[in-house]
Amino acid sequence: MRVIGADGSQVGILPTHEALKLAEEQGLELVEVNPRAAPPVCKVMDFGKFKYETSKKEKASRKHQSTIVLKEIKLRPKTDDHDFDFKVKHIRRFLMEGNKCKLVVVFRGREIVHPEMGQVMLDQVVKAVNDLAMVEQRSMMEGRRMVMVIGPRGGVIRAPGAPPPPPASAPPRSGPAPTGSGAPAASAAAADAEGTPPAPAAKPAPVVVAAKAAQSPAVAAKPAAVPAGDKAPAKA
View 1: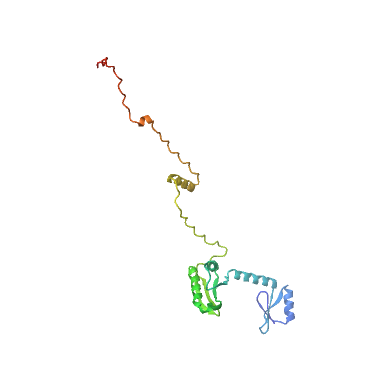
View 2: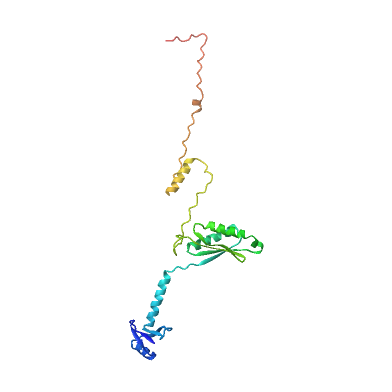
């Protein structure tokens, strides 16, 4: 066999017992690296260290390697709205993780005579995920199934462990305007925005009602009666 030393140098062609003796003298093992060569090639090395370095390199290569999984989603030509929304939600999650989706429309019974219904269902799915996905394989019939493959667009893949995008805030609910005066409502809204309790509303000022005598017209006083025999006093 052809022997290679521990430092990579060519030792030459040696019998098996001499090659084993050479490895034992160095405290190493004799490992056959190319059995198909003529003669076979063996190397003197530390086999335990060699296995450790090999496994370390494999782990490093797998760390930078991305695996794409093909997820299969089954539909029916008459899938109702609730199931359709539920499946579209899962498809969007699969696409954002970098996976591909295989959309399968299953026909049962006489549904096979209307394949256009399956095509309509696939078109609705593609329209619902058009911002994330692109069609990689057009729809085609496979027996009683219609199959389509979609994949993620560039730049939509989310990193593993990254939180999903925050949902859009719901619009304010519209309702009837509150009854009563506008000032207390405005002050309450301002107090809620600032986080302070609203100030109590001021009581209306009391209305003073004038005396009845002041509201009634003045009555002229009648002159006192003068007897006939007496003369009226002369004016000064």
